[in-house]
Image 1 (tube, rainbow, N blue to C red):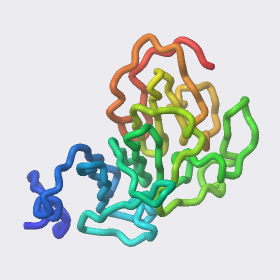
Image 2: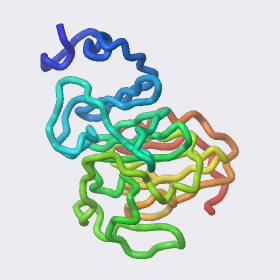
Image 3: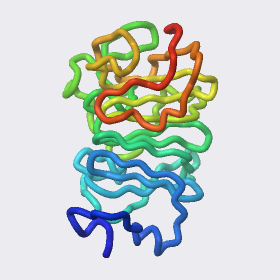
Image 4: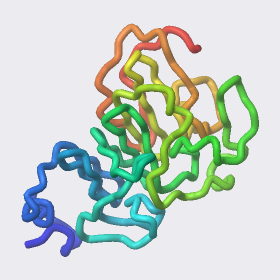
Length: 226
């Protein structure tokens, strides 16, 4: 029996394409209808629904089998990743050297691609979506680097349905995307299209394995906004 050929699988089964290729999986994440797996030495495979480009394959064709997601470095070599996370219709990955890449649905700015999104100016260093969902934030079908974090070494990422969090190696938290329920942890009603909402002076910083489903509380104690 091959996973992906049946609408329901009531018991855990090995993904045969990965098993037969003798790929060692060390991280995995499940979205609403797509899955990401990370295999040694750091390559991403994706499978499932792809209507928003959440598989990162450069198209919108869904796949029942895991397919390799390509993300080339500046000299053409394939980047190696250490973590993958899947949201409702979007995906993110963290490279071994602390860079964040995102792809898929960007309806609420959850990809963090602030530089290419229509926005108005808010607080210094913060980009806001002008009209919330459907405001011209286009889907991205291939992994793109979140440039606003290019100068920050990120140690961990997490995602909810339409928002994203990242923890830097120096203990700061960055949040972006849907903020309808204030799940970004900042007193703003608008969505954020860029990961420049920084929450710092943490008393404690938990592991942040995921952001629950739609709305989440981040497992940290926040003292001040910066």
